[in-house]
Amino acid sequence: MKSLFLATVLGTCALSAAAEPMRFEKRWSGGNCIGCEWTSAEGEITDETPEAFRTYLQENGVGYSLRLNSPGGNLGAAIALGRLFRKEGIRTTVGRSAPMPDLPQYDQGIEGGVCESACVFALLGGTSRQVEGDELGVHQFYSPDGGNIPTAATQQIMGQLVLYLIEMGISAELLTLASKIPGDQMHYLTEAELARLGISTESSRTPLRLETGDGGLVARWDSLGSDGDLDRAYSLRCSRGHSGWLLSILDTGIGANNGVPDRQRGAPDMQVALGDTAYPMSFDNVIELGPRADDYFLTVRLPLDLHRHVGKDFRFQTNRMTNFIYVLSAQGTVPDKTTLDVLTRACGD
Image (cartoon, rainbow, N blue to C red; front, side):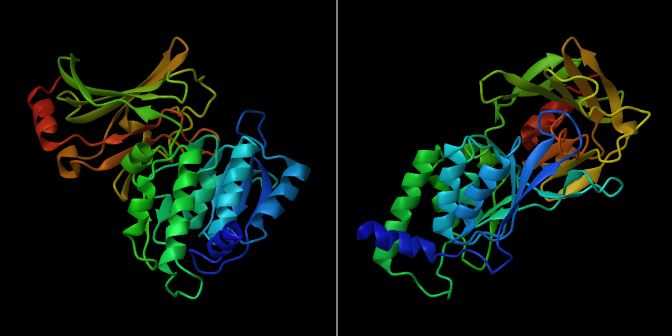
């Protein structure tokens, strides 16, 4: 009886305004590669969503990953959906999908996808989770009519959520963050929070370190894959020759056909985002690009002064193609003022 009561309470904790019920659709970019086929999951999570996904899974499979774009919905159903993802070994990520404008028979990922409220708990069920800052939104849970939930029921809900987070390998600090945000507001998790809470499994970043190189000082850090091996190596330095800041990326194990930009095609989607602002970059910003054994190396000049962005999370992308969005990408945090001053005084070639 106790478990039935708790399931009923969880089932009434809708975390978002009503939207179209979640739909699952097979998507394909037309290529023959890992990641060329995925499942889009868009809409509100309802009581019927877990069973609808079981039916979809039996008929279609999932493909490389499942891409969520949802305002939330039924918390109990979201947890059931997350457990189903984990049981089936499904990778989860956030994003919208749409037909390609010139080739509508194929699909592409497009900007603007979010996973909010109850959707976050569904996404946590993924065996691996590929997410970025400002994609996951959290706040307090509440009843559909906006009324207060009895204290005893709240305690039971929180207890079940803690157990679920432990089951999924996520820090319970997530609940602390969410509990501070009123139900009519939303907090979008930052890159630093995603890493600290264990939500993003694509890579873990090593601490920033300063080393001598290129005639001056260089700030270096690495991203490690879920297996602990090097995924990408990054460096950031001041350059007198290029009158600005250079970002270098060594991406392991990719080939020239894996979404790497070139001068012939250009780089129309290259950008660096600091905080909430994205700065477009052209191929003219590329200083060095090319293979190094089985790896690929890129150096770009950043089109801004980092002293104006101290402490901000940043994200660099060469493209926004669904399958190659992380090729030669970089994530990190702009160093503090003292570190930037040291790097500037020891500005290299």
